[in-house]
Amino acid sequence: MLNCRLCPKKCGADRENKRGFCGADVLRVARAAPHYHEEPCISGKNGSGAVFFSCCPLSCVFCQNHEISDECKGRAVTIQELSDIFKRLEAEGCHNINLVSPTPYVPEIIKALDIAKPEIPVVYNTSGYERAETLRALDGYVSVYLPDHKYVTPEIAEKYSGAADYPEIAAAALHEMLRQRGGCEYDENGMMKRGVIVRHLVLPSNKDESVKVLEFLSENYDKSKFLLSLMSQYYPTHRACEYPEINRYLTKYEYKKVSEFAVSLGFKGYFQESSSHDSKYTPEFDMI
Image 1 (cartoon, rainbow, N blue to C red):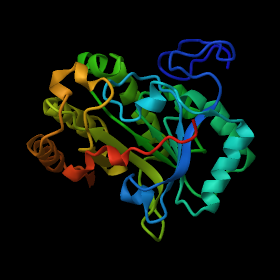
Image 2: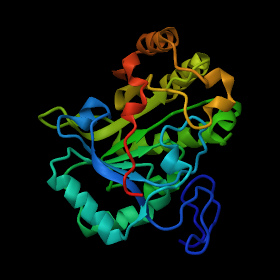
Image 3: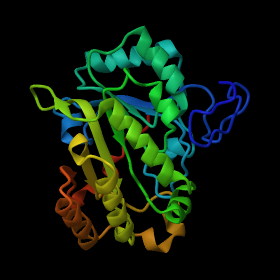
Image 4: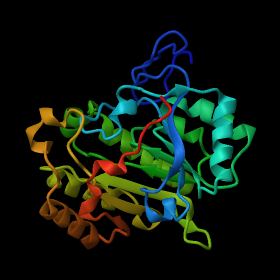
């Protein structure tokens, strides 16, 4: 890809000869299989057809998928092979095609969907660090947006994810996602076929930042147009050991205070059990 500007880093890399800021060169997939640990309206009983893409424009020190996001492990595939992967997951009975960390490969994904657009919903599963311009290219292809909204404080975003501009970028991206797919719709089995689910992971020692995120979402977006997924699944991994304040599990007290605040603001959606903070929920990346 010449002069890549897909993500907010806009590094301009010629990815045919040099990896981009995110580490991406050619189209790479680390895993493609039914996944059962998403929100209930995404996973259902048959699983979400999760396609985990390699590389990521963020550098989250606590990333649970760092093996593929930071180290870029994965297998190079062609656009035709990616389209075949989508068809296989649909044939296996998955409820949707779940594109996990797809940002570096949006043009290839669009081409793969053009070959044979699935009859099941397409889910765009992202960190939230997206250019609105890139998202606009996906209008008509994506049925459900599943973004994170990690931070509203630039200093915290820089410290833990290497992106001081994350708050403003994620805010603009969410506006575009809601423009395209705001307002949740479900099929007869309760599976989401259109909508937006905003995820927020509560970090240890950072419940005040979580409260600020929830306040921001409540004040700047129509809560009737999306669901909140408040996550407690944090566990210390990757480079978290370099930051003592997050080098531990989230306490029940921390999560309880944030979840109670979310309820007081009138958010609807999903709240995780404390048992979710376990590495067993991180899949094996077997296409390496």
